[in-house]
View 1 (tube, one colour):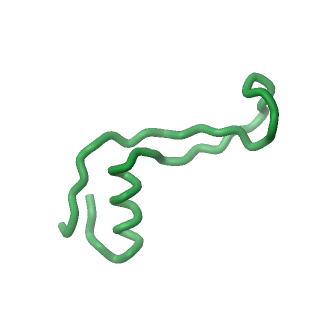
View 2: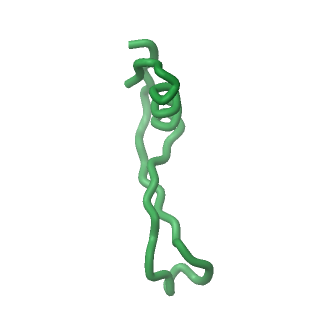
Length: 50
């Protein structure tokens, strides 16, 4: 491995339209957490990361 990150991966939910959260009909889901984001970006740059 080139880089090993230690931390927790989180899921980030956000609405796909404007307005109050309780009235939202659809959401998008993305990965969050600094350690995960760093590992993903380094992997896309060609580094071996975990």
